[in-house]
Length: 247
Image (cartoon, rainbow, N blue to C red; front, side, top):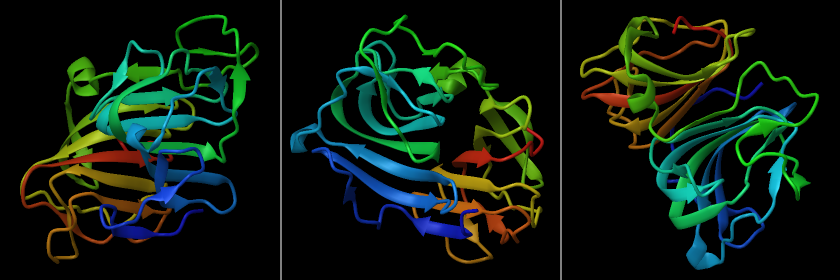
């Protein structure tokens, strides 16, 4: 399991090159046993980044949330701030990748990525290879909030607005955008599943302290104590969870 991480200042971290020219990463957390990880990725054409030329799939899921920029896997749906994409294991994608501006995106995978190239894909839309039947279906939403809207709910025991992005119908594992109102304060001190958070807008104060950094990252393993959290103004979170947490 990944370690407990609280209010990591992502903007203060250095970019690490990943190998291909113009591709950089900030590793936010990683499970040393499975290789599952969350990272902020940067695609920089000015430094020589070129998009993949051939469609491919991975044997693990790949989940992406746009933070800045403008790029695409198919030259039809463009990943911009707030765009959400979920590729279950064995999902063929990258049919006509392109990039129009330097881009940042949050990337989550369930194990170390492998690349399996498909020179002649059977379709030009997301599909899983023959024999694969993942419980979570492929998702590609340019603007999830416009598509699905906000639903009244609760997060960590206090009222919030929720936009579920995708969830596994069998395990409850999934992801959501969560909008916290000004003056929100958490009440739940632990959960039986992991919960992961990235601050997209606004900020979270931890245990009565000062407001945290602009882009703060949190990871709480199952049953770990969650420090009291609070907002001063409206705050938008990208939240991931390993089982249903009531959304």
